[in-house]
Image (cartoon, rainbow over all chains, first blue to last red; front, side, top):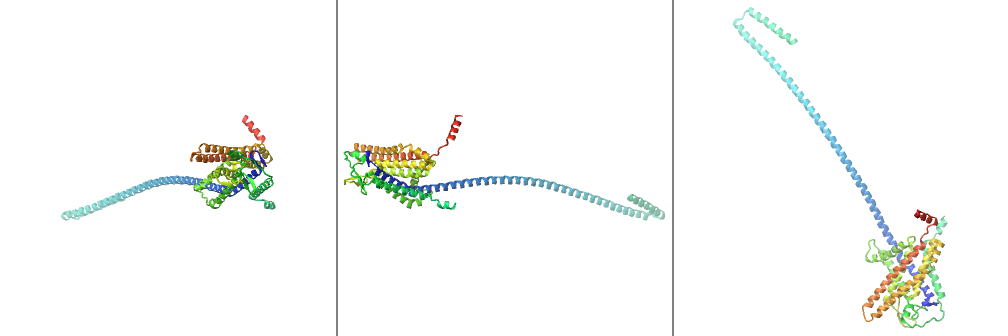
Length: 170
Length: 287
């Protein structure tokens, strides 16, 4: 079976048999398990990367939601502040108005009271003056009183009293 | 439908059966062709000629006289399979997602071949990856094997240092032919008769692959021999140069053969575009 260059078909076949055994054996024993492991690991890291991307998306979503919430809260707070300021202004005005009204009422009452007191003082003063006049008159009368002067004085007194009464009624 | 589902055979079982059948066919062919056909001896006159052609110094393998390279081939295969088995049992189950140094090295070697298969044969990278992984390791460690200088006894009773498996023309032809057959069958299986015939047209492929491999190893061997000759008095240089040459052509030949096989495999399994589509594309390009 020898040919030039010492080519031998049997030995070629023996080498081929050796190769087939080697290829089959190494593929099954070594290559496939390693490739399987490498694929598993690649899958694991791909999954991790996907999860990471998902978490990142979720984080971004939460972040935007948080920003939105913060903005909403800020707007709400601003609104509340403005409303409170308005309410405070209204209340202040109302209190001021009430205080002014009360002050006016107090002043009016004081004025009325003062007027009433003045009037009563005047009345009491008139009574006292009348009494003084009466006593002075009595003294005068005691000095020079008679029936004529007495009746003239009583008449004068009644006229004066009637005149004063008429004024009061008017 | 149920019957059909029951009849489905596991693809792994099919692959295993095909593999065992292939081994059985090869064993049968060896037994039939290799039975004693009388004496076949040639006188050798030059040591160099014998180192190249392995015509004289033969070794008995179960009564069959074979070249020393064949013994080397079986030893390399045995060692590789044993190492693979040890890795499979003790190392691979303990692989971690964050690898250590050894695991990184194993992964790097595997990923080199899977990467080559994915790049050159993107449509069907599965089997060719496993094939070039195995053949690549075989050529690399087979070439380095000659550095160990393992001794064997020839049929003449003299001692001989076992050479690299593919330094023998028969070993190189076996690698070339097996690679060609792998590509051919892949063409037939993936693309049918057209694919197979397409590969058949490249009948020069096994010859070119075989002789490229053989020639490369032979040239490396001859250059190493020359360096040994001229620096015979040195104790350091020949060793360094010899190791470097062996290592270098082991790497180069592994890379060249695995790249070639993956490229041709990729071509054989590449789905062809229909003519109409091609015409349309061409028309589109012209416009």
